[in-house]
Amino acid sequence: MKAIYNNSQILDQYAIDNGLNEDILLENAGISLARLIKKEKKKFNKAKILFLLGGGNNACDALVAIRHLKKCKAFKLGFKENENFKKQSRILENYGFKFLKKEPKFNKFDIIIDAVFGSGFKRNLDTKTINIFKKVNSSKALKIACDIPSGLGIEFCFKADITLCMGALREILLEDFTKEFVGKIKIASLGVSNKKFIKEAQGYLLNKKDLNIIKRRVNSNKVHFGHIYIAGNESAGTLAALGALNFGAGLVSLVAQKTFSPLIMLKDKIESKASAIALGMGLENLDILKDDILNNIPLVLDANCFLSENLLNFLQRKDVVLTPHPKEFSRLLKLCFQEDITIDTIQKNRFFYAKKFANTFECVLLLKGANSIIIQKDQFFVVNLGTPNLAKGGSGDVLSGMIAALLGANFSPLEAAKNACLAHALVAKKYKFNENSFDALKLVKGLKCI
Image (cartoon, rainbow, N blue to C red; front, side, top):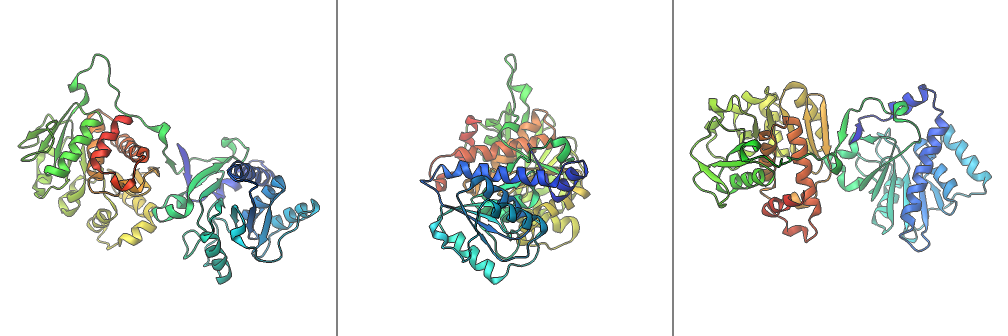
């Protein structure tokens, strides 16, 4: 897991307050940036490298990197220079380095590094900077952002292929709307002990190594892995049931008239022997949300459940997992807070609204998206491995079944949501064929590769 912070500037100050010199942090940040560029330049034949510089500490990291790279060009965009920048500029000039005087032809470079603005920049970009970024973004160069793409979250920004975070991962880089601008996210080491730099994390980014799934013992049988009940229609309900079965559930029953899979048992109703229940997938009759049978069984509530006010009866239960996509989350916020929040507003502020919900209710929220958020009270996790492959009907149904499978195997609701979401994304990421051909059944089949 990688720690996530809303504001990493406090970490720099924390390190300095504990005796670490600012120049050391700056030097190590620049060395990390230079190291990344050296690695990437091997992919080119005599790569031509250009740095775009602002005048603050973000640009200072780049000035240090230039000193360690030597063969590169740099262009100042004309912003006010702070004392650190002036100091590093003088050091470079003493080495004989000369800054470009005129705007370069960006299509002549193989690698372009954005070191214009850091995370503290909040104003709109000026016309000159926007025009430069438009030219750079349209070039074929490999584009690297130092710490954060300049202008991210504003009307226009640098579009990076790689973003190198300095010491800590910022929350804004994991908002859904930023996915196309940040590229691949890497975290630079500042050469100091985490005990001196990293305070208690505000959240965590999950990766493949964090995955924990059901493990079958040699002397086990199907009853050890739970009996999952799915309440949904023939198509969506069956997909959820197959997700549960292929993710480790011992038995799976679908409460429906029929199913397209011979592997799934059919039931007329949910029975008290259920280990966990997933419901809502294509479900038209939502009266089941009033049934007392749901009171003492772990639940996954999805899809059509967000159309019913009866959903409110489950939000203070710690053994309930909600799995809305943004439109369903908009409905949920309306039910909970009587607020009309547009999908666009949610997508630009996913962490804010997810935390607002979690601060009020006890259940687990899994807000699906390009960067899915899993949160319960003050614990939150992000899975940013999702691909456009998953933008197909039925993908969310399979995920609900997978969560139910882990609940039935006695995973805690938070752990069930985390691990199912992570596995779900990893399967889609492994798909090597035309991404348009990926579907929910291929997702189910791909679970064998986890």
